[in-house]
Image (cartoon, rainbow, N blue to C red):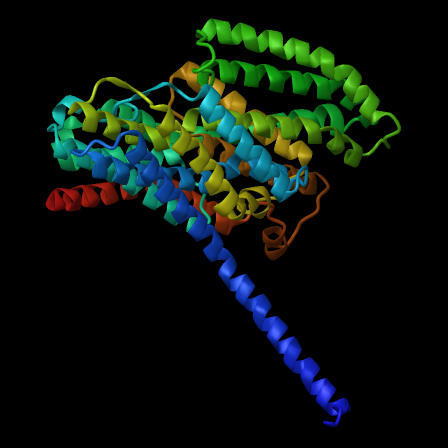
Length: 486
């Protein structure tokens, strides 16, 4: 009979088992990113198979399958990058856990895309290129394919470096670059490009200014009052009513295409009625919720948590209804051109194409969204439910104002601009308090107390500035490469 292990041998065995356990943990940690990549690749393959299953016509089958792959790839990148603007402030304010926020956002995005996504999309994005100026056949298909590929690749790169960029501007840049390569500079709608360029500045400034103004209102009417809870019972229902009315008008104008079509005046009436109803319904809810709460700002902030979650959900629904076109628009154009040999002014989006866009956004959010959600929600400036609510309300109000002004603004620029607006307003307010109390801080101390991280600010602004030029240059290069192949 063999001798039983002694104490030293047992200790050596424990150490070896501990090493094996650590190796297993390291392997699991290392392979975790590969799971997301594998699921994403499987989705791309399914998109190609779906295109072949639905259409399957020999002349353009391979081209449409390839377009379906890049349309799905674009949708994945939209989910990974763009949706963070809606749920980042909610997670940063700790109103929802990351997993819960992702589930809610994914369901809202799918619902928005399938229920309210547009049945018809503009042939060449937002009228940037005249379709008649592009030679029909392979050059036209190569142009649309190049625009889609370039936009998706640029958004993927922006996500990797942690920069929330505009998916709308990315596809605009792709169409612009591929259009110039295919038909020359005269094919571009330069007045439209001028309006889009202006929106780079207008979107974040409007979003930041409105978010800061709402926060200033809350500070003046609630935070600085002696009886904060009484002020909150009066003003929180008003703010919730404004939120509900704004979102109702926003969805009426931008996001109810498959349910009902409303004019601008009808959407405004819908917004006013919805706001009044929600204001009246919220009064008893806030009164019951505030019973027994202490007269402290922590209690006031808690009252904004549920309205913030509702606002973020509505933003995700509206985003799915509108921005899914950035993924399915070029794909629908390619399918139409492959079937009919030319493009029309407006083309119908097949249901299978809309499914690829809707579920692609959801998968992209699940697999790759948390990084940008953390960046927007907690790494730019510190947020709480009250501040995050200001960002959400600012996003809806800004889009409504931009629609009336006819400005093609970016939801990404508005939301991130709102976060910056909150941070810079808090910096200004803190500096004003210090100056009024004659507290002179050293330069290093003032720099340490900055409430907006300058490195993230500069990275994001730089990414915004180069979005259209880089996406356009990449699309032009891809177009010439495709023309050499075909």
